[in-house]
Length: 169
Image (cartoon, rainbow, N blue to C red; front, side, top):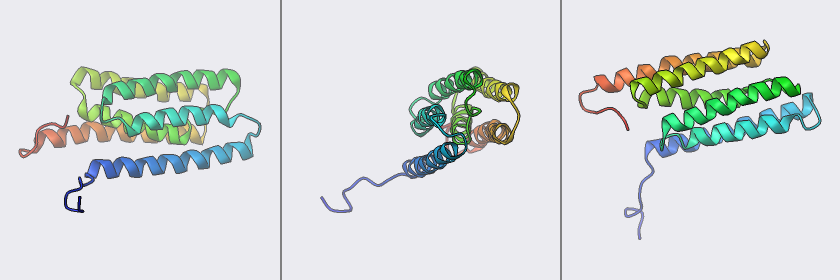
């Protein structure tokens, strides 16, 4: 087999690989910062939630609505658990980024009622974060989710307006 016979990496694979690198670096940095500021094992819960949500974001192309729904449920539970156990506020910065990717992707590719439910779930998770406390983490999660709620439907409209391309699957 020579180089011409090998399958070429598509743009989506490269984007997902880059996103995975960003997630890994962000998770490592956030974990280090939580170890330094909160101490003890307070960082373990944030690490587990971030890894799960970011892993779902990397594989979102298989089932965008299902992965988004799973991440939204996990994040809602994480907000409640973190508040009850007095852990760092959820969703953490990298978790919020993963949620934004998942929600935006689901809004772009899912049927109308499913997309509406995912969008409402994203707004509910952010509202839950605000109910559990205020701060920079909450503002960051709000900004990222707002970006997803605007970008996902915008790309959906763009896809439907392109005559050379049907809606992405």
